[in-house]
Image (cartoon, rainbow, N blue to C red; front, side):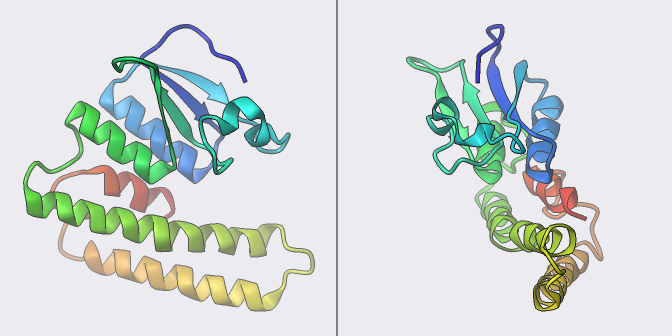
Length: 174
């Protein structure tokens, strides 16, 4: 992994739902960034330089070059979205109740919808022999999560009042 021109952020990316969420946020916030591919097919996520940024060897990750002192790295898509919302004061309610609701839905996504979608994709697209149990289990759980999201959106345009970081997360998997 290597750095390119000096930009506000270095964005370590591969075209997956988690990568897309962060790319949408960077664009919508109007932030200047270098796009640095992390080819997960080649194993780039296991390279020492990347592990220093993302110790869980998962992308996306960002490095904020616009901080006092040494650049600051942030890993995990939910944490990155929250960090960017805090930094830019965008896509995050300013009131306590709204912030609490955003965090609830953020944690719901990173603990439920996202992982269930990933497991379902694995069993449908990659598991040798299809493994019917895994397909059924994760299909049922993913569909349950979609039902939770659909119920939340029945009478509203956005998950939390106005368009927020959880709308980027929730809809990247739908």
